[in-house]
Image (tube, rainbow, N blue to C red):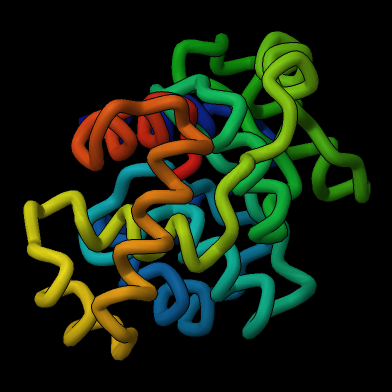
Length: 190
């Protein structure tokens, strides 16, 4: 419903044509290849593939395509990850439609557009302290898997998994793995 509403609002702009819509992140690349498109608007949370992963895939496969990330979750960690994945803009969904249309126009001119409140929060928050591997092991542990199960699925030794989890728990200031997952998600690090 939100996707359709955004498409309708953008369609009212005289210089913007909405040429495709998909409901899943894993459908984004195929739609972008099948339709002449200049800008992709992606949500952070999408079934099949996150908007951050879809943005990175688009950047790799269609480097001239501009990417605007929209989110309900105004978390500084998401902003950092969006920029790292190649997004050209990062806006919260509750921004006025005119701001979204302006962002589309600006990224087409080669500008980067970032919600100013999120930018300030990201600077205040600092960088994600978790390494890529710590983030991957912590995210994989979110379903309650044992260290042995994680080791098998991630092709790591049991001790390596234990060490990554221990370090992630320390870096997040958590008391246990579940709390570390929650903290990392709340900050947008996972």
